[in-house]
Amino acid sequence: QKEVEQNSGPLSVPEGAIASLNCTYSDRVSQSFFWYRQYSGKSPELIMSIYSNGDKEDGRFTAQLNKASQYVSLLIRDSQPSDSATYLCAVGSSNTGKLIFGQGTTLQVKP
Amino acid sequence: EAQVTQNPRYLITVTGKKLTVTCSQNMNHEYMSWYRQDPGLGLRQIYYSMNVEVTDKGDVPEGYKVSRKEKRNFPLILESPSPNQTSLYFCASSKDRTYEQYFGPGTRLTVT
Picture (cartoon, chains in turn orange, yellow):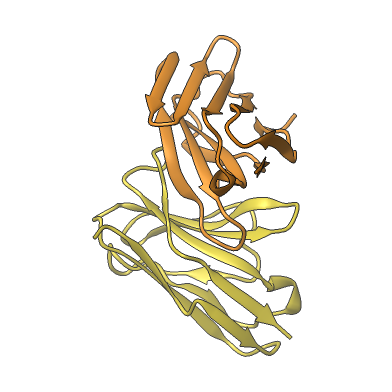
């Protein structure tokens, strides 16, 4: 079992729809959770961080964390073609002292 | 502006010719790391540094060296590059190993 798992996609949604990206992790004592956006050939860009159970909203982005079920998700409302990118989930654990990246989910927003 | 810089951004070289990719951050971060990214393999950590003079291997350290003589700089050294080191390389920095990491713009390396 991979430490951080994401569906590679592509996830295709129409413009204006809600895109839902999911990530599961195996280390129960993970404490920090991040979402990065990466355009092709560019560097990962941090878009959301979340540390406690529940939802965290920032503009069109909402991160959701459920530690009991060991998943973290990212919702993108009113998806735009410019949101088309690969989204990386990263999970950190003070126990292991690591930040582990998932392989990413490719999102395609069709006009 | 808080940033991580890398140089060069693009490099084409030949097998066996030593090269160095520089990385510098201006955020006073203690933790710095190098990754390579290849299609289908995701981000793989090469080396990391917890602080000045403290470095350790990541998941794919073979063929690479690093040094951390100053807090802001963390160069990646390929003493004898080979074609299997052709990749996209990212430097990242963070205040701590499990906190959000900030990435440099990347260096695309081609070894022929």
